[in-house]
Length: 108
Length: 120
Image (cartoon, rainbow over the protein chains, first blue to last red):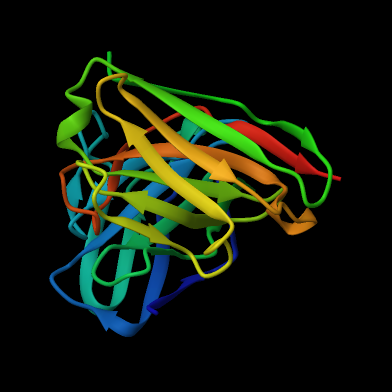
């Protein structure tokens, strides 16, 4: 099983600041088969990024994904008020599908 | 608009059973693998089960194997999760999610709003 570890657990930032979220995989994820989701309170997760760096349809370009192997990053260029949420990474390289524990981005 | 609507959740006693349904619309349901994901109160996302587009392939998390059964009726555009021998630790919000392809190992591009299962 591929274990995904997200850090930090909580990120306290102000609107307009840049957010950098980490997702580490053990063992590594091949093929860039990693996705990122955003979840707001009381809502279902929403796909942001797939194949490590491809934005899903309708996702603003302030969201970007990068990385390969064991280290992946989600960057939010300038935080908008609607971006404060929990973010999860998910790998689809190997069965079982696994999710990271999440990073909460909160308003400082 | 592509949509998934879950139903069938509720309160059940330990050892009991529930059947969740997920009605799909506005896409060719039979072309895509589907997955159930759950989220315990205040916790993260946990993969539960995946089914291939034809229904011929099914996959389960170890935590539910032997107790849960995933199935689909492509003629009714509906996904199911039969949950037996329920335990307190199965208490969670259950989401159905559409894969972006027929691949069973893939990301999910559409999620339902979920249904609550409480085992108590």
